[in-house]
Figure 1 (spheres, rainbow, N blue to C red):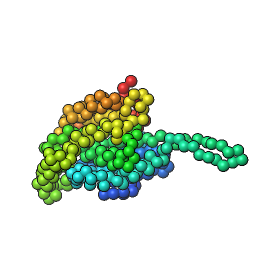
Figure 2: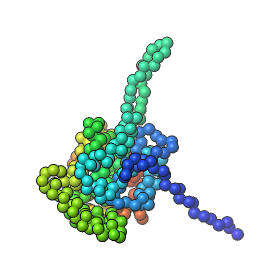
Figure 3: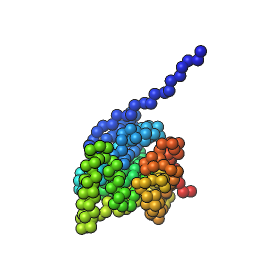
Figure 4: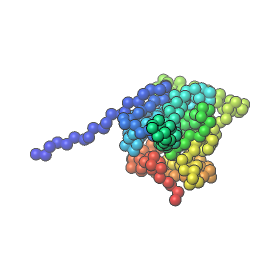
Length: 306
């Protein structure tokens, strides 16, 4: 009689250190100096859904730190100074990674024959992965706050943009915010709250107090003042991959394509995967091989355009 077989148990999610209300960090053992994945999730994303991407990255980059930046309604509707303050724990993580990667440094080694030696440090290997518009807003806040401290662009191996960035239309933003709230009384009360927040936000934009959030996001994520690639010698400013579907009811696919064309015009190495019939931020399920393959391509630094 054959022995009964049992499925291999799924390993538990890794332990993250909480750095702030929506910011946490996973450090593997062992950890490879300079390796960091920045995962900026969509509005109200449940941890059970986020864990799929974390598990994939632990396979693709087992020795990389994972910086998780989650978003909710307050994180994307607060003032820019408030966003700057809230993102600072993430800024400190990135600065720590960069400080460990000084490329080359000369040191004096005391000995009977005094000599100079050169110590080589690793090049930073940083990947940003954003979802919807909540993720790009978090990534933008990080880049802007980081630049105020370093006055230099963040060197990256690439950006993955899932279901975004959107151009920002009132009802699209409204629906995304409402659906990010937990069902029940909170969501019922949220209908009025979200309308109020959006009206105030747009009034501030109209009065010139703030740049429109989506305009700021779409510009900053391709701005060499704030972010750059590590392949300038090949004439590329960075690498970006867009993952989207024309069936997405939250982000218009035309917005994604328009941003993709902006990236091409700026000289970025651009890739895209158009999924068939998948919902907003739902491209992973049923397409895991393709999706994880693109994650691996971006992490490994393989080009799209030959």
